[in-house]
Amino acid sequence: MIDIHCHPLPGVDDGAISFDVAVAMCKMAGKDGTTCLVATPHCNYKYAFDPKTNRAKLQELQAAVGETPKLLLGCDFHLSYDNIQKLTADGSNFTINHSSYLLVEFGEHFVPEQMDNVFYEIEVAGFIPILTHPERNPTIQAKPELLFHWATRGCLVQVTAKSYLGGFGSKAQALSEEWLDRNLIHFFASDAHDLVRRPPGLSACYEKVAAAKGKETADLLFEKNPSAVVNGEPFPPAPQPLGPRRAPKKKSWFSFLRG
Ligand SMILES: [Fe+2]
Image (cartoon, rainbow, N blue to C red; front, top):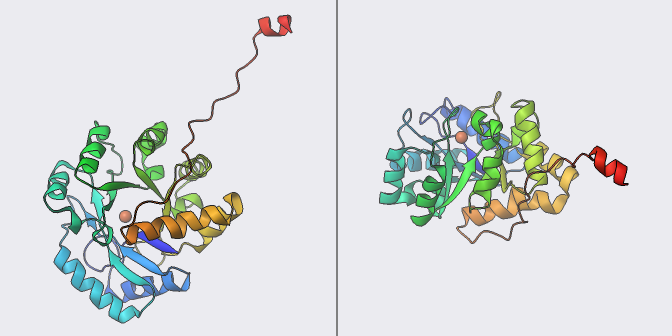
């Protein structure tokens, strides 16, 4: 399995609090079956993003961890005006393994207006946005059809494994299950930050997806799709996103009378 969203680099954001924790997180992921892990430090108003520092820390971490999992760099890219400017100037610092694929996150409680324009700008600049954990965002929880709207306009969707397993509450879990049924999810990732509260590991989620949707779907979401991303390849054919389920129409008294 390939994990495209994780925070193991120590001292760069709110992820691993020490080098030892970072090593233990990577080893935990490897033991759980993750063969490739993308370190995606935050880039927002709170945490500066320094590609040179990140590269050095990644190298040091890989040397301590050994060959597996293979560690790559990306960015948990916060959608803000400043960041979009940086992206158009030199985006490959932020994309996953210098590909065209870019993780994008909204603020915790906020979805910018004119999101269609922002995604459009990102795509025109040559990047493919991967929206991170929309199931955990209260604004999208209140208006879940936004996701269908964006997914049908070229935005890829990453859901947090722990959400699908119920660890982020019933709303996030119900949305993850519904969106999986409607082919709106392209990846599950750990978004791991530590060893206890938000640990790495995808196998429990893989098993649940395989049980619900079959092994082929699980392999697509945990292996094939993320493999295209880390290798900078075209995205594999995806099943057609399905629109919202409509409640069956209630029969009126007239229709009963007419038979
Ligand atoms: Fe993250």
